[in-house]
Image (cartoon, rainbow, N blue to C red; front, side, top):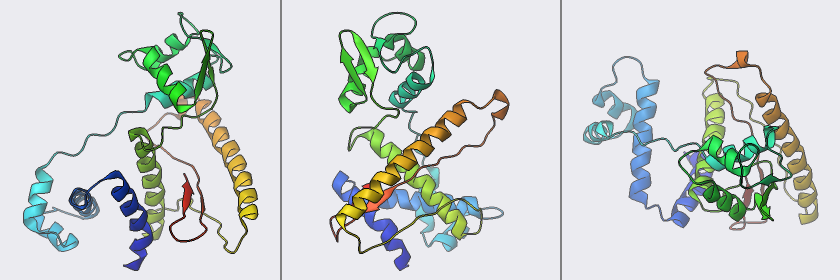
Length: 248
C-alpha cells in the first residue's frame, strides 16, 4: 500500500491548500470505489457484492448509488477561441479589429459562444496574458490558453491531464492496454544543469504538441469517430522536501 503515498500526497496537498475538507474528498473516493467495482465486475453487481469487493458498508453503497452523478464541466470557450483564432485563416493572430462583422474578434467570439458578450471573453484573455489590445485591435500572444493560477479552469485542466495520465499508467499495470508512458529521471544535478535540460525539454515538447495539434486539425472528415486521445508532458524538479515544483 505504500505505493499509494506518492499518488495521494500531492492530492492531499492540493486539497488542504484549496480548503477541500477530508469528508468531502472521502465521499468522492467512496463513489469512485463503487464506480470501479461496478464497471469491473461481471454479472449483477449487488450492494453486497460491491461491499465485498470494496470494503464499504452496504448502507453507504445503497445511498451513494442513489445519488446523481456530478455534472461534467462544460468545454472551455477561451481555449476554443484561441485555437480557432490560430488555425482559422479568417482570423489573423497578428491582429484583429475588435468590432466588426467577418474577421473581427467579435465575430470570432460569437462563433464559439452566442450567450456571452465578446467583450467579456476579450477581458478574460487579456487578464490571462493571452491577448493584447491596442488602438481597437486585439493580438494573440500565445498558441494555447493558460488559465489563471488557482482558477476553476486550471483545476479542470489538472483533473483532465492527470486523470488521463494516471488512467494510462494504471491500464498498463493491470495489463489492459499498452499505453505510451515513459520518463527519464536523474538526481545529483546542479541548478544550471536542470535549467538547461528544462529549456530543451520545453522547446521539444512544445514543437511536438503543436505538430500533433496541426495534424489533428488537418485530418479529413473520414477520420471522424468515437475515439479520443490526450498527449502531453511534464517536467518536475525539486531541490529537497517541501520545495517541489511541477510544470504540467
